[in-house]
Image 1: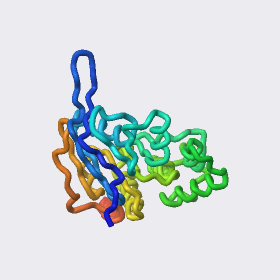
Image 2 (image 1 turned 90 degrees about the horizontal axis):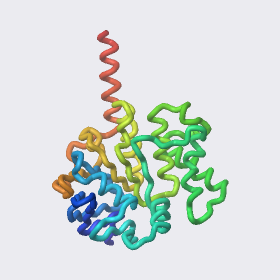
Image 3 (image 1 turned 120 degrees about the vertical axis):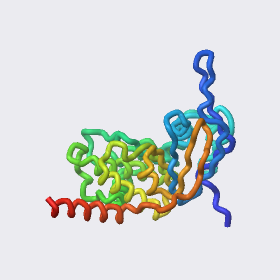
Amino acid sequence: MQTNPVIKLADIHKVYHTGEVDVHAVRGISLEVFPGEFAALMGASGSGKSTLMNMIGALDRPTGGNYLLDGIDVSTLDRDALADVRNEKIGFVFQGFNLLSRTSALENVEMPMLYHRHRIQSHEQRERALHALDLVGLGDRADHHPNQLSGGQQQRVAIARALVNQPSLLLADEPTGNLDSQTSIEIMGVFQKLNDQGITIVMVTHELDVARFTKRRVILRDGKIVTDEPVQNRSFGEKELQQLRAAQQAVKLAS
């Protein structure tokens, strides 16, 4: 049975009109991402990857072409309908964790459900938020505030928040950008476990080491896709952590 893509971009263009000059940020991109994929979107500054991510995230509209998100043609939707699609179909994870500082981890994760067009009962909100925190290994930190959590733990809360509405797509923008090497590996391990459970992930990153944890690498240049291929010699979070800890232990013993 043929599976329908979560993302289907067909000849997408984006032109910005700045004064007398038209800037062609995206030039005729066609791309499909299917359920259960884990893709890295890469490219240098000015390649068009951020513009493309904004369109995939229904934060911006294409100038030309069609975009189907989980079968919905988002290019035809008005502003309110777009907001509903973003809330229900896409979970966003950002480089800055964007957590509310005076709010517990549990309450931060519950936040997207407050904007759901179908009212979710408070007891169900709590159950779903606790389940999302369990998925990222933070079920025992539900009552902690962001200032009581490490950077890696805060990003896990942000991932749980992105998952709580059970979206079709998890869209991550440089999710390890504010984290040290070990914590970055831990977070990529979390994404891999979620992907192993069938969650579709598209991650924007400029770091080759981070992209090696994904399954597919899509590279942009000058608004076009120049490479779209499976990741070879893929990294795995648990294995990389074991190797890092062994190296750290060796350094301690040598000192």
